[in-house]
Image 1 (cartoon, one colour):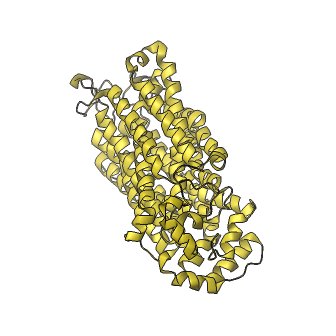
Image 2: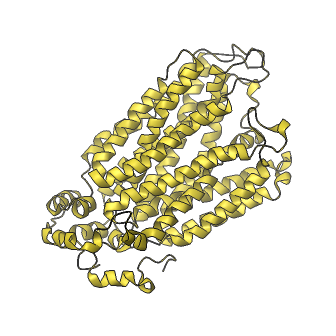
Image 3: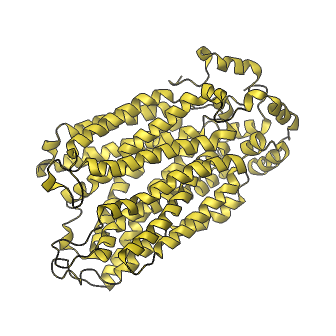
Length: 540
């Protein structure tokens, strides 16, 4: 710790794990719970939307969303999220974390409800209003990424900071799980109340008129957890690091943290003035100084998150095949509309329970023991191995007797994504940049990830189509096939592993030590000498 370290920040760094840490995890985590619910619940109801709004008389199969409409409904929230991450990330550094935190939450609540109230006297009208509100829902969700991560990192102590930030992110798993469970409950109730024949028996009657309420209820309930935590978000004091290092208000920082930590802290106004006079701590995002100190770090966090999300969101390609293969989802024409929602929700809940949720919590348990770098390297390594294990003998996996093996390897791929880069790419950008740029840099890294998600979810939807024109999904041009798509994804994961070498290890270090803030001149000179850089890429 250099001579400039403030007592209030040191007190936070060495504080024992207390009740306020758990309060912060729950308050920030409920935002992520809502984010995941809202982003993933749409996949539960897209088939139902196709049956309700795109029914074709006399067709052998139930109605489905045309490719462009499906891409818009599923992808518009991603576009909103990308824009929100950049905008609210920047705003969080300008106005303060707490002020902006309330805005993002209210936007999520209003747009969740509005999505369920989508109106129009034609299918196009309903889809257009749904897409409009889901864009702005995504915009609010985007703001939650940099703000939740930054708030948690600035509240946490040195020893368990990684676990706390990862625990906030792990609430995503519970959000996906809750979406599946709620859809199961509501679709069961609707199915019992409004009996309908299978599509093959009576195409028109198989979609009960009340099914139009079902998807709206599932979409709107996402507003509830966010609304419940609004009061607690507003009660949280601004983080001491923002108040002291960015707003330069030592008195307020000491007063806020005295209440939180329940100890007396001195307002060190003189130290704040000293830090303010230090020109080495005033550089901006587009300065040469930032490029020299953190340019490679930002390249590392953006590239790894981008590459990870290409692989992570491409899972949608195979989910429907896997669910059908193991018999979780029967052929669409053998079910009515509400039964189909139930079966899809059941499959998503099982995947979340067996693969998604455990991976997140493994990261929480081990991140402060083995470090971010090791977990990210291990995750990318196993994702690469498993993707190639699926791709190279792909024809072997297509035989019915081998499908269980395919499902196991597929599940392991996503277990190691969550016990790996999916969690660490969220944690690290909140730890390694200066306080005045922390939220902005996290937002840029997260937006890069969302760009990867758009490539993964939609680019690969076209890419994975069969080379044979007669075997492509309705409305899609021929692609390179699933086998070649899996090989490409294996290469993407391998690149992620290589770019991880640009990301520094932050285990056990204070935020100021990582960012080079608050250090005396000697320490800054040491940092300028690459041979003595304190934030080494490989863990020490």
